Image (tube, rainbow, N blue to C red; front, side, top):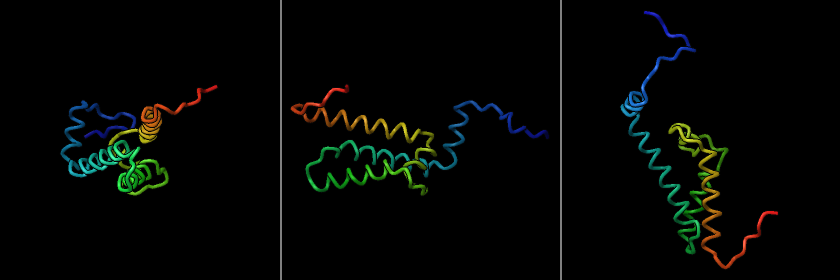
Length: 115
């Protein structure tokens, strides 16, 4: 049997790839997806919270999402990497969302234009 060289990876159709991934580690993947969905949901739902619980939930989600130094198995960066998502891109998108959401939730405030 001939071994494939490292630079000659066998072609695997995307549906085969995801079916294989789904069979192994589906429970762990679902957990990571749920964790990410919950954190993003809390970040967006409580971004402008006025009560203590909402502000705490937002801070916890923001801390987990924005912490670039954490490297544990369930850190934001690790979860994104294992799910094949660009962590930095998601962070930038959430920051832009928050800035736009803050501006739209305070229509009386004037945001200075960039010079």
